[in-house]
Length: 197
Image (cartoon, rainbow, N blue to C red; front, side):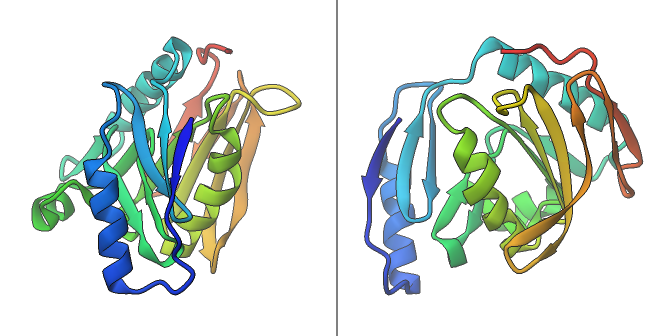
């Protein structure tokens, strides 16, 4: 992973705009993910086959329960300007109308109904700590962290009830167990097919 540091110690709307411009102009190899994490533009390599397989399994399960007016997006930028963050989650569930109303190539993270992050070896710490805090601060109602690189073995954790920059754990387990996503999803997600790294 490479990083470009931009000093945002005195964040303002103008500086956020400059940071977004740098993000938009970053030329990364095809398939790489370019994000802003706490004011640092990062470039991560393309995800592994196991990572992509898990994203597909979760997406298929979600399509069975979400309303038609919502979409599931794999490359949607979600902005959290208060944390100098512009993340590209592995899956973002958001109303289609938000995307159509925003234009550009990102939406406010607060508009998402659910964010799913699947850790990679190079980004696990970001997904567990920095991005979780950003999504919570933005008020994303549900954050599903699928952590194939957890120290005790692959885990899945559903966070909810954001307060400031902290979530409460709503459900947690290991790969192979079921995780329940509450309404408006009402989904019992079976992780039995999730491949390990």
